[in-house]
Image 1 (cartoon, helix red, strand yellow):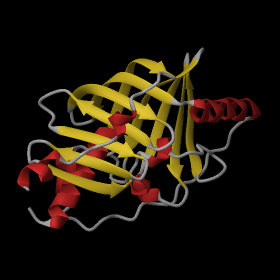
Image 2 (cartoon, rainbow, N blue to C red):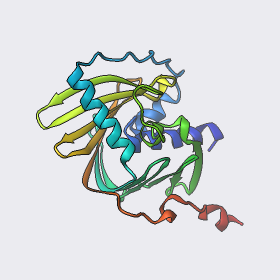
Image 3 (cartoon, helix red, strand yellow):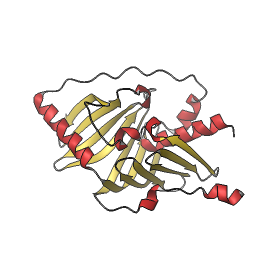
Image 4 (cartoon, one colour):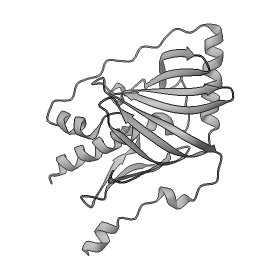
Length: 225
C-alpha cells in the first residue's frame, strides 16, 4: 500500500470513529480534489441562550475524564459499538467491538490509528483531526471555536461548533442533557454534508483512568524485526 493510500485510510478511520466520515465514503473522496469548506458563521443568541452556552463551556472545560460505552450510527446505515476513554486535554481511546478492526488512541500530540486487519499503524497530528475540537485544553466559543448552531429541544440542548481557523475539520454538534448537565452525544457534519452520531451510554465522569490507555507500542514493527 502506498504512503498516500495509507494516510487516507488512517484519516478515514479517524473520521469514522469521531463522527466525520464513514470509511467507505472517505476512501471514495480520496480520489477527488479536496473541497475548500466555507468559513463558519456564528449564530446570534439571546441573553438567556448565551448564559446557557457559558454553562456548557464551563462544563466541558471542567471535564477531566469520561469512560463510557458508545453506539455509533452513520447516515448511510453504518453501526458500531465500543468503549470510549477520554481525558482532557488531548487524550482519547476508542476500542471497537468486532468486526470493526480499528483501535484509535490520542496521546496528546498524535492521533494514532491502528488497523489490526492490515497490521498497520499511522500517526497523525492531533491538531489536524476532528478530535481537537473536543480535546483542546481551552474549549472556548470566543477564542478558537465558533458557535454555528444552537437549538433547545425539551430536556436537551444542542450546540454546533467549528474551528474558526480550520473549517475543513467540519462541524460538531454536541448534545447535552440539561438537568443535570451532561454530554449525551455528538454528531459531526463534514464539508461533504455526511453525518455520523456517537452516543455515550452510561458515561462515568471523573473516574481515574490508567494512563497506559493512551500509550501505544507498535507490536507489528517489533514482530518484523
